[in-house]
Length: 314
Ligand SMILES: NC(=O)c1ccc[n+]([C@@H]2O[C@H](COP(=O)([O-])OP(=O)(O)OC[C@H]3O[C@@H](n4cnc5c(N)ncnc54)[C@H](OP(=O)(O)O)[C@@H]3O)[C@@H](O)[C@H]2O)c1
Image (cartoon, rainbow, N blue to C red; front, side, top):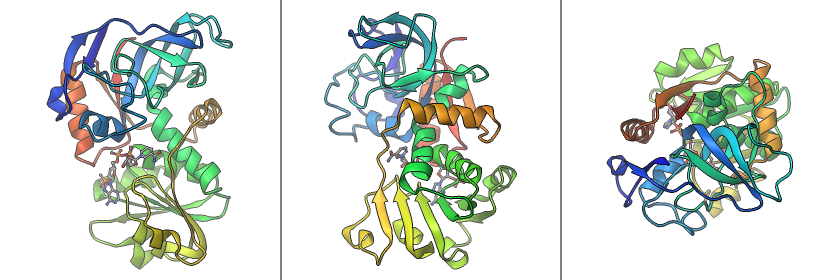
């Protein structure tokens, strides 16, 4: 199969087109022909050699990176229930996937707990944009912060892959939503219903937001979040480990969120897209080493709008 893989850790220019054998599904796995995959900051860390166990446990070179995918089931392991050849599916590869089994290739073998069916009305490109970023935002709002209608939430970094999902999911839950972004993202965020957009280059959120019920930090600035939060509020950060001091700030609940999404979370996200509550901001590029390099470089610049999806097959 065609893959875009690396032979050593390094810069985005390490990506090359490399022919590899198709992964073989185990009895509890399905083989999926990939139609699209999306790229996350985690992929950049993997490529640069900055991830450790469990991600790297089964890696050697050449290494096919990537976790988020959508595609069609082409083989079904003997112990798998609920999936059949021809099913359209999407999901995330296992955290500790092997070297030939990332998403930057034409096939992936995945455990039947790591995927769900694509509902009618959602394209392969849209579905591939949802898993890690969407589930992270959904898990944060629903399970971690337990966000309720009428509460006020500050999403630090509203224009990124996770941020754009977070602000919209928070609005769908009925919250008042404030966020930070660069000026070029203001209109988009306001059009999506965000109540207050702060250009963090000019104004500190600390100076304008007070007594918020919840903070969802996608940029790694826990101190700012803590100052915005009310005395018994909840803060979840996905971008840095809070210090012991930050975790023991009065009665505030402060936690790092590492997301373990489920198929049910993916189904809920797809439902939000289909009923118009979640708009997907996706830049799509055809499957080539050049485009994977370009996508990695763009994400490393830290100013993307939503998600970048690589389209593998119609
Ligand atoms: N723990 C987990 O489970 C988990 C899951 C997913 C992601 N993550 C992590 O979460 C972080 C965000 O992921 P992502 O996919 O959303 O990244 P991303 O798409 O690369 O984020 C880019 C966005 O960050 C914004 N930004 C950069 N610096 C900012 C600042 N100081 N204040 C406000 N906004 C700022 C930019 O907005 P402007 O262009 O408008 O400035 C841009 O839109 C990454 O560190 C990622 O590794 C963790």
